[in-house]
Image 1 (cartoon, helix red, strand yellow):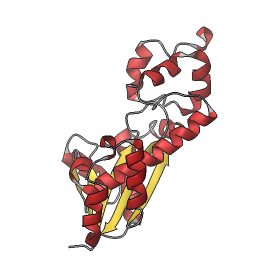
Image 2: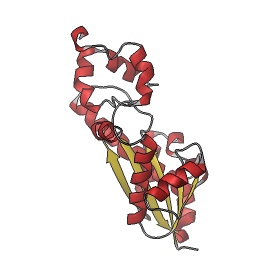
Image 3: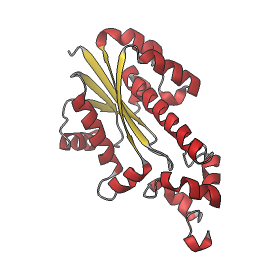
Length: 214
């Protein structure tokens, strides 16, 4: 049994605006009691203030590393790679740079064998992966909290430079309103994931019509 445990998760996978953040959290197995205290719930079950508080406490005994992939870079990468391959490659790179330990991943693929083949393709073979691991493993919840806090900070920065577009998710009415508003759309265009599958429904509502209509 390794003396370290590690968990990986992401934030922003289903968004249409802003970056995708993939994070690894690592801590000594001796700190599992503290880990359960501050990461008993995944980030989605916490308020922004609760996430911030938890993150401050978690940083006292956890090591966090993350990769932030901008909307522009995601669009470029998706010309030659699937989203799941992009995520697997980033996770593999983070694992390689971390202390050796037992690794648990919140699995993005539908089937575990598919995800394992992806990770092996990028040079990582020793790990476990489950759906909803962020709900069942505190170390993965810790990674989820870091990823969400990091993405939220970036979204706040983008809003300050552009306009209020809500969370950046297609389920958010403020995000849809910003994409429909001609002036707001011009400001946030550099941060829109144009190759995202979640844009299909929005495109069908003609939010991305030809430039002549703007």
